[in-house]
Image 1 (cartoon, rainbow, N blue to C red):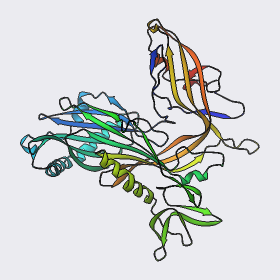
Image 2: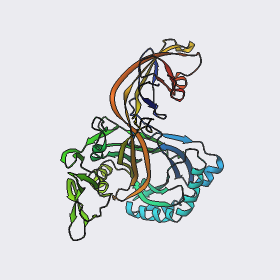
Image 3: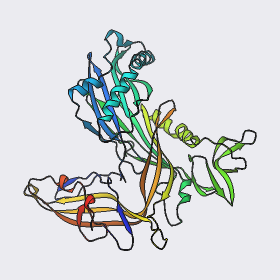
Image 4: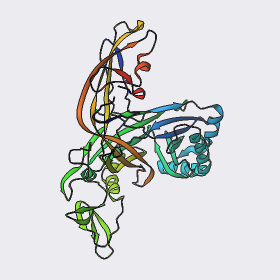
Length: 450
């Protein structure tokens, strides 16, 4: 995929889910991931009938480089690994009966916290055994309890970092399955730093979805699925406004220093003249920065959590939220050539792949392979990732640099490829794309020579 007029990059890791059917087109509605999404480890210890069982999975952390359903990829645990991760013994039946949800939360929380250090050490060992190098792990202990004679579950959680540090996240008591909110906020003002003919997808927008973790109380097996809310899995809410010092801005953008009319100002806050501190969040406003005033870079994030994230968590009864907050974006250029000219890097975003198989596919044959997407300029985007609790407290769990695309052209191309008899079409086409420049060639993104 090389063009003599410029440099093209097809980003590894952007491949999407694909549905393959006989005699008809079908495709999965999945948003693209550009670049490799970070992973997290999910460990669930379930205590049922006086016994404990452990399941472990890896999940993509939703990132602002795109939104992907955080489907769990099950890890096959060895017997020794399961025993090592089963840190918290099941509570006795007599110790798991309570008069109220709060009594159950207090008792189970106190019990699990006594094992916090052991949990951390066991989970760090599991993370180190993985090639994916997770940014952290969510450990959940599920204890069956009875509240005033009715069956319920107390779910105690702990977030563990690769260095062994951890945060105890509290207990949620419920008679339903646990849920997680995934949300991405893209700041609106930072788009002002791009070249005038470049665009930033979804500036000033919040994209969110709810995932449910279903646990089989008999087996302890867990499964995470994205839930359809009002008919859709992912929801986009725009908070983009116009009229700020730099033009457009997002309602929950962070305060930042900028130059407006050759004067240094602080955006999105009001300064207390006595303390020289950004004392009040004021999106879309600016104040002269004459005395190097201080501001909290998380002011916009706090406003977002208070006004949008917590209400969503309450509405859908979720245990915690993963919030990805975009901080900076910049164009990507190649090093200057001999004449000192820098060339921008082009990128291809594959948003849909469809395959039409022969009607008698059991004997193999030719598949018609159709791809759609966009071509544009590559952007380098930096995001901070946070874990948010129902009370609004949040913990930064990592920073991720991702690639996005500033689209300039939509493409729709078609090619053909031979599927051998007895071979899965999905496995043959797993890493393949159709040349977006229209040659009809089908090739792997890892052998890009077109």
